[in-house]
Image (cartoon, rainbow, N blue to C red; front, top):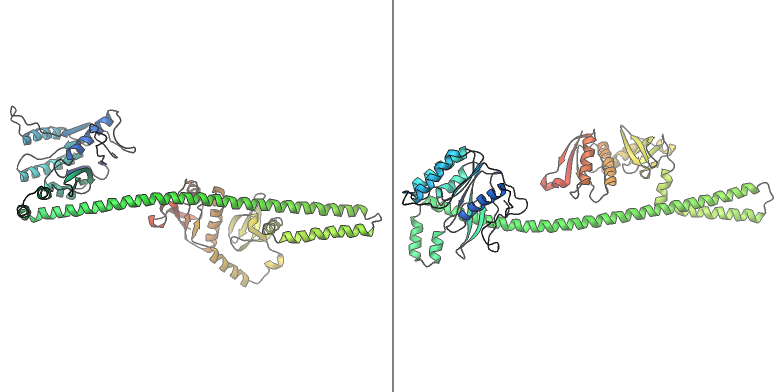
Amino acid sequence: MRNARHPLIDPEKVVPNDIRLGDDFDTMLITGPNTGGKTITLKTAGLLQLMAQSGLFIPAEEGSKVGVFEEVYADIGDEQSIEQSLSTFSSHINDIVAIMKNVNKETLVLIDEIGAGTDPEEGASLAISILDFLRKKDAKIMVTTHYPELKLYGYNRPRTTNASMEFDLKTLSPTYHLQIGIPGHSNAFAIARRLGMREDVVKNAQNLMSDEDSDINKMISKLNAQTKAATTARNRLETSLDRSQKLEQKLQQALDWYNQRVQKQLDFAQERANEVIAKRRKKADQIIEQLEKQKNAGVKENKIIEAKGELNSLERQANNLAHNKVLQREKRRHHVNVGDRVKVLSYGQTGTITKKLSEHEYEVQMGIIKVKVSDRDIERIEKNESTKPKRLVRATSAVRRSNAHSELDLRGQRYDEAMTNLDRYIDSVLLAGLSTVTIIHGIGTGAIRKGVWQYLRNSRHVKSFNYAPANEGGNGATIVELK
């Protein structure tokens, strides 16, 4: 139950607590000073459990979960009776005997001050024996106690934990906060000293304590200090993590916007270049057509000179456009056919076009590997270039190895772009002979991660894959082992 609140306490004053039972431990022993909130914690757990099983809303935060018990047994409060000859101890024992007759694994047991009301040594031994019996029945158990022996019980038994109600020694007042994992102590000496008890009397009382009890109290004090420090550090880290995640989200959005703008500019430049080329070709065709129509007629010298001037002008403009990188790529891609020897620019490797997959995509055979590439990524090799000495092939191999990285970062890319880059990357590392690589896909919406995992599942070159360790990216990266 997350931030569970007792339903009968003023909402403006109540102190909420996280109450856990049944996951990591089935038995909780709550210790701490009187009026510290132990009994209220038991009542809160029991009342909220019964409210939930009755279909009522419970005063707890979203994300809380409760089980369903066949019975909820509670021994809380003192039912002394002179008429029935019941002392505090016998009243408790009567209730516990009744509980023990019916307890099973579908039972929640809540006992306040177990074993109290009799000789402390005998009461502690009896309390341990009762707990052992209830634990053998696999019940879920919450008990409160002052016995130091039960504090050790919480450490020595499996699926059992100590808990305590926090006490502020500076103000000598309880905070009512439940601390799961560490036991508490009564703080009798601190309270007595603060209230004016003679110092020599307090020190004498401390000296009378057994070494074992003193060691336990020192251990408890140390655990309290460590728990406070850990809680403070965790709160700071959670705040820092939240700020970092928000900053990462903003940076990712800015990067997406930048990539979209760059792509739009490239597309626009390419369209404009295509328009310019188309217009110049059309104009040249018109000039040639006019000359052919007039070739048998008497063409004046000045007409021929004008036509040559126009053609020369178009040639100069074409030469200027030839220096445009976009147009260079356009020129290379429009002059390749199936069977041509080409250089795949992203891999630094040569191969042969074996199939035209679409208007702008080809299948290229590079050694034993077939890859799918865009026409922007290939350059035709003239026949005389393909007959160069073999030593240049070795140089190309060195380039291939230097271009192959053991890590691919897909963050900030669009889905289709990321999948294309992943396909090329796997081909390149296979050519380079790498056996293990890392794919960084980030967390985000999860679309890129799902696409990466789907691709890896369907690839016959992948031996295994899984998330990276926490210190190497966690769920934001995937380690891939290749065949």
